[in-house]
Image (cartoon, rainbow, N blue to C red; front, side, top):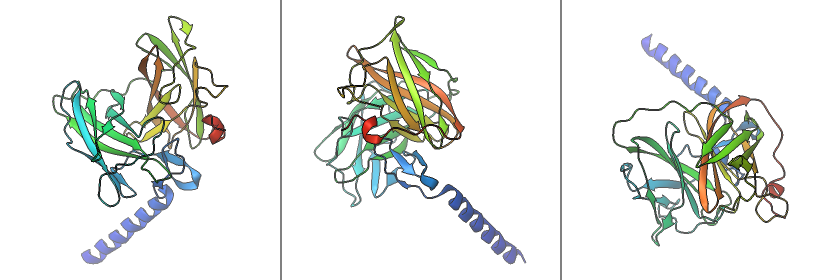
Length: 299
C-alpha cells in the first residue's frame, strides 16, 4: 500500500508540473532584439538574464568572487555552442557587449563596457565597495545570430553583509545635482509608456548628449529574481524629430505585476549619470508600443 501510495503521489506531482508548464509556457529566445526579452505564452514577453546558458551559449567568469576594491579587473568569456570562446560579435548600440553588475538587493548598479582580447576573454575594471551577493549580466549578440542574448551569473563579495530593503517607490530622484522625474506607470502584459524628464538647477536640460547612440538607456530589474530588461528610447539623436531632452520616452514591457527597480543612464556635460527609481507594475494592459523602426529612428 505504501508503494502504491507513493506511485499515486508521483503521478499527481507530475500531473501538477505538467499543468504548471502549460500555464507558464516554454521559455525560449525572443524575437525583439531591442527589448531583449524571451517569449512566453500568448505572445507576451518577459525578461532575459535568468539563465547562465541559453541556446548553447554560456557566460563563464574567471572567478565567482568579487574583490572589495576600486578598479579590480573582472574577466570572463562567452562560450559558444561548440564550447569555444566567442570572438565575433555584432555591435548593439555602439558596443559589442554590455555588462551590467547589480547587487541582489538592488541598491547597487553599474553599466560597463569591457574590452575583448583576441582569445575571446573580456576584461573590465570593476569597483565593488560593499559586501554582498551580486548578479552579473552579459548583454550581447554573437555574429551571425539574429537576436541578442542576455545571460546572467551570480557572484559574491566577501564581508559583513546586511541586505538593504528595496528603496521606496518614488516618481522623483536626484543624482549628481540633476533631478529626474518619472511619468507613466508599468502595467504587465503590454508596453507601458514611461517618460523621464531631466532638469538641473530648476531648469529643464535640453542639451542631453548621445550616449551609446541614444539620449538614454533604461534597465529594469524585477525585485526577487532580478529578471532583466534593457529598453532603448523612442527616437534617436539626429533623426530630425527627437529633442535632446528634457524628456526621454521609453516603451517598457514587463512580464508580471510586482516591484521593479529602474535604472536610467543619460549623458550631459561629458559625463554619464545613472538615476534609479522603484516602480510597482500592476496587472493588465496599456497602450501598444509604436512601430519598431519609428521608435528607434530608422527609415
